[in-house]
Amino acid sequence: MALRSGSRAPLLMVGGGTGISPILSLVQEMATLPKAQCRSVEVFYGARNEAELYARGALVELAKRHSWLTVRTAVLEGPTEGLRGALPDVVAAQGPWDEYEAYISGPPAMVRRGVRALYAVGVAKDRIQHDLGDEALG
Image (cartoon, rainbow, N blue to C red; front, side, top):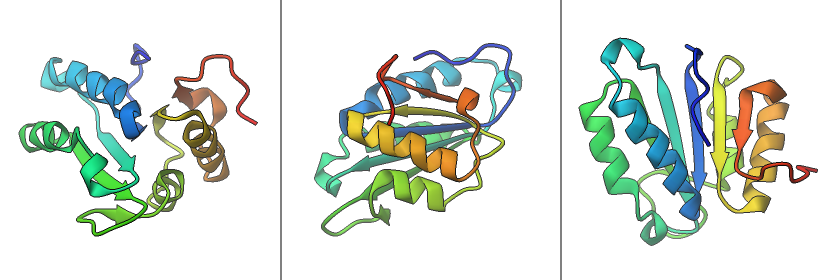
């Protein structure tokens, strides 16, 4: 995945499990840009439980240094400091996202479900990028 050049739309970035790695790379790329080129970024990072949120520390540190970045976590089970539920459902419930460009990365089933959830809350198809390539989302 790569950031769409020329756009000034706010960004919604969704990473499930190890799918957070490309999302973290995109956020780190944004952090190297001049402040005038940065745009609002909302990151949602989900896993089965808190222990699996291995990149949370790096994301939280970036959010402390950059006011344009907000990071939220979601887990399915166990105690949590964040949100609870399946990542696509949590993201959809936190909207509206219709003005955002969305980037989704993670297990194929989560990405498919996430894309459908974003469609359902009004995000246009051409504003969603994911890491499934040409694989059918249905």
